[in-house]
Length: 192
View 1 (cartoon, helix red, strand yellow):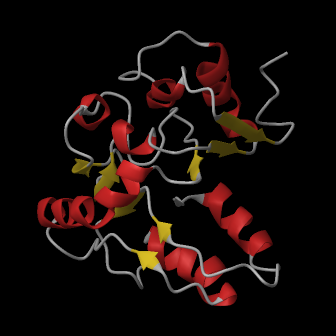
View 2: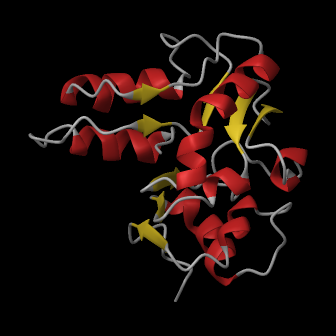
């Protein structure tokens, strides 16, 4: 499972330089409610920076251009078997506010326990679709990537904080043994 965001864009650009990557089955953690050719589309960004350059075609895409509730239900059906068997790898970015996927502080989606994919209202005013914590936690390995000074406090909250997931959604991963944080020096600067 892959995600969107600036850190992910940099990772995908680097990964696209590798040759011989097999046609992996790829799913997405979240999407904005925009068409795939829109600059804000996670799928569009991943397609341009990773999927097309590597010729990856086995993609489970969230249809951000569709009605959010219908798109979330359709995506949940599409990836249910992958969630039940467990994603081999879940890659998530970490937002400045300690969000992961489109699970933002104070949002009801953070507390969702039964549905695997839900529509969300994003703090930037856009609508979105996101997998919920139960879906994200199905990952056999979970990587949270963050870079830059702006992420340092969110990293500190994730690794040293005691907030509830409703306040810092990344804390929903707190008890996961198969969790790795990939950080640059700036993002890790508040950990010492």
